[in-house]
Length: 372
Image (cartoon, rainbow, N blue to C red; front, side):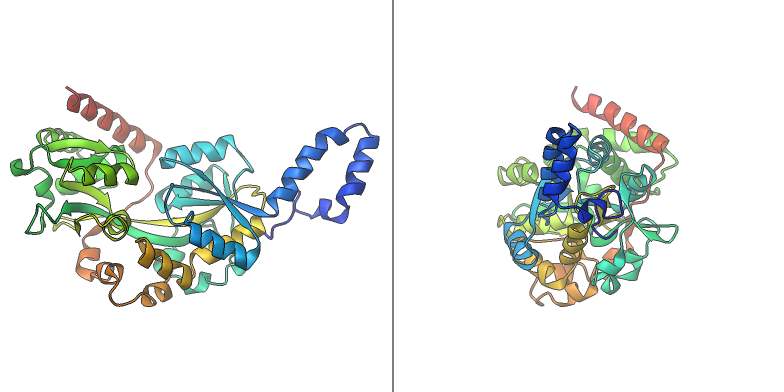
């Protein structure tokens, strides 16, 4: 993928736009082609990114620096779940250049043909990435790279340091009767099942006893204050003291503390927590594949990451050089260097369609009981 025109041969590049339209007009089709060509011209000056809102790629200062270096504008479209991301890619083929994909979903996007192989030779920082993430089979298929490892993080337990003077080190704190109506979890089937599986001593990706998982989730009802849906929702509700203890994302917790000055502590429970990593993919028939490679390379370079981490708060970079460049005082550097905590993680893995459906059905049943 070298940023060629969509026919893959650079065909339109051999004919001037004026001559092409003039020739087409003689055939009576010029009017219909003009908007198409305008879109192509626009595509060459911008990179369209599909991502969660507020997740690194849309920081204003970063986009300004990228435009200064490349002349390219970056525009965004957002999704609120990985399944929505897949739907957008399926229903809008050829619309997106760069897509942020969770590694556990990258394979699904690859199988469905909505992302395309990446020319890693165009990504100069690629060789610097941690091989454990860079070479993961979750991002690479049949010798081709379908995702460039970007950041990794943890879904564990966030708590109010104003309320908890002692760190709640056990996952059972979520179920402790002392925390009645003070707990929040995300409204997400896979995340809910994963945590309940960990709490019941099971493989979080492929639990063998879903009845036990359901029982554990139902037992959370007396402690549940609310279900959160987004980082913005979490920050607002935490600030309003709607809850004090929550399952939450590590990078978001650091942003809540750094950016919003909220009294947030974060811990990986003794029983374990969820590990994950995200990649940067290129959409099938991307309108600006050349620009996409440039943006991906920018996203994994140390200079960008250090600014993101120190200004806003970020998950850990998959680039060790970026982590090493962080100031020693940065909380990310210490947190993501805790080898004992990292060993307690279970990393997200691909799920079958049946497993996804089973988790979704279970969570729907649990939420029905929560609503009573």
